Length: 300
Length: 289
Image (cartoon, rainbow over all chains, first blue to last red; front, top):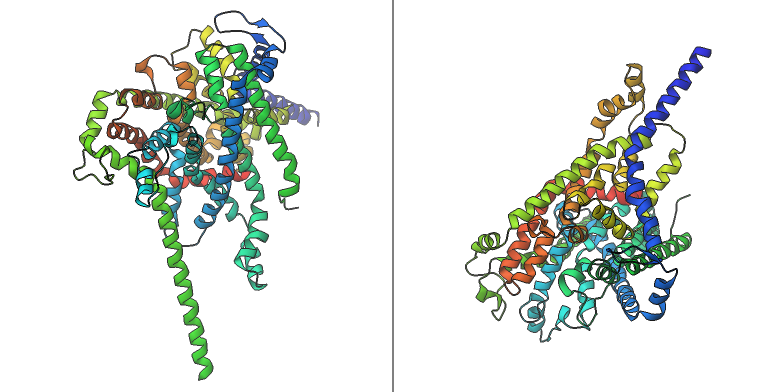
């Protein structure tokens, strides 16, 4: 009896040791690449600092300046919010529609699925360059096609009124990525539900609203959060295509942060900017999570 | 007799309607696909145009004589191969790092018992929730004080400590594998790590392949970190190189699109080989959240 428990504790001790040993790389990485940087960012946000000098504690001065005296901050914020409002609903609705199509039981479906997922593996830089070419005011294919139906196309990226819409149109192309995730959600819906609904004589339209959509809400909720976070962090398009212009029409928040941190070396202020961005993102994530109780259907 | 005919008619009507729906479905999917592929088709056709074709009106969709040498010119006038090689170096280092670290860490979380495990695993998940941008300035400062700016270290080192998303993925996967084999291994005298490398590793290869694919795609497509850390032209990865191309050949869209397509080629090549696994993997990740 004693010997047995001795071996049991020895094994448990060994397992504890092995456990900590195995996750040791993660723990080191957590401290170096996560814990310390996040704390330091918070600290820097209360300092006046540019890379070369030592940080000087200034309390809330950065935040005060940001909220009371920085028109660029509000500009970047409103551009980013507009972008989120433009691209997010389109992405969700088109993504669900596309997933419904891709869920049809027909032969050769894999070819279609493969095609629609291509944009998800194409880099932001490549898409940006392709879109610049597509939306060239004089020679791009979009304005050419528009001219065939007698419409004089706008100057897209080069017109302050259209630039943000043009950037948002990139995300429409990326909808294939989210469609594949909705598709997985659709395929998890038990087919018996549809069979029962068919027997009861429910129309396809009714089945969509009463079965498909409610049972898709967990996937929808997950994807909404992911896409929202992604939309707030839009950067590459602004950097490659517009450099924030024209007339700051695409001056995204992260682009402003990048300019302040890595071009103007205003690292203290830039830290405050990025802290506010993270708070905004976490706020909207929390709101989505909180309201999800009311619209996400969980099987119980 | 009469009833028979009406039954026959009804079946006939039903099958006709069904095949009509099928034709409609194919028609709809194909037309959406064509519209969806316009950017790629346009990129390809532009890459094969002459300078004259680019500015021609009405627009030339398919150049009469495809200018394949646009690709040669693009590669010659710009070190595209070098950029792609640089990207490949980072891809391989990141894959190496993730494959060394992630199975080990995930094994600890999935199988071994030790105090504080569930709390630590919650921390793993928490690191995924907080946008990475908040770490940019402190990490830049750290690497700068280590004298490692303008090297690949800041772009690959973190992989050797395991990406949180991958750890999560592999933990979920290991939890689905049977524990009986572990016990058998223990009886045969294997230690914890013997079990990991002899028994668990062979069982989790599908998810390791997924890690390789993701790491390839993410590293190849990464943009923000390379532009922050790298300043020497010769060290640029392909995405940064491409974005520079724009400044040099502002209106030469044919060369420009040739370079873009060339940069996409490795990704598309990989994608067509692994698309089933990738789409399946992404779908399962999406569901588990």
